[in-house]
Length: 446
Image (tube, rainbow, N blue to C red):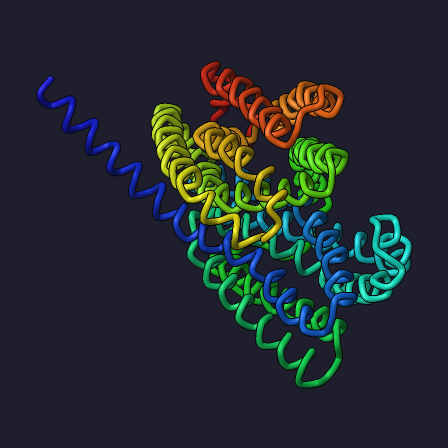
């Protein structure tokens, strides 16, 4: 017994070092990404209300598209890390190249669809007649950068699978800096208006994609991996990513349903909901970083056949997910009266947001567990289960959310429905994790 405890502690410290070596840089890269939109908003905001309103619509459409296709990163991480665990770096990079080619192809298709339909799309999403031309102009130009955005997603997954989250952090910081400089130069210096902001984003995204490709190509040459597109490999990547696409679409539907219900509650409630959701998202990045570490570590462990190591890493990451959720929840609960004045001076909005923020704070420990287990099962390649489980969560959440206005409830009750959604996800993910059915070993999940 005297030797067991120190060994357990040494194992825990080893897992901690590995988790945080991956999670901390991943957190920095995750935080850097929304700063693109923040910088664009700050610069375009000086052009007037109409350009800023147009940017808001167009940027929302772009970030939604990128969010929906995030499976390009997740599926690639899982597949590459399994090959790394099996000790076949050549096949790992070849698998990653298939993911990048898939990203480029999907990006080209989406871009070709957006270019002619941009004016109709922005009108469909509620842009006012005054803001619509700005939104369409920004969206049409930015569409040229969608293939690069998707390539960045897939290449990020390649490097995460190779257990490298530092390079994505450096590329994200460089991309953010270039985007800010280009926006200032093109919008204000060259006088291109909102078009300058769009071109700055396109150039920055293309530069980021070029940096990633340079790293991957160098690795491919070092290990003798082919860079040519392989139809079978690309098809396999698409098949692996399809369940994660369904899972992401179901999650997006949950969030859109919540916003639609909040809009029915009134202007003050939907404004308050946006504040609560934004803060919840921001704090969720810390848990998402743990999930990214989980994808890389679990995939590598299962690829090497180490099921006990995968179980131990899963347990440790769940512990850290709960710890992070508790700490961030307490922080949010204590600071919410100080945070709200930063977002609004409207007393009605503050009154609606204050109790809803408390519910969001209380749900953060559960959010931590959800993020970690989602990352673990994603890393294990358990996409089909994640898709069906998320569809079940959507089936539970939708009627609960739609009942809120019918019962005369407010924003706090809506966030109670959000908490129910998180609890339901926890149950489905925890049951799967406990079952051990995700512990499928080998370089390729059978």
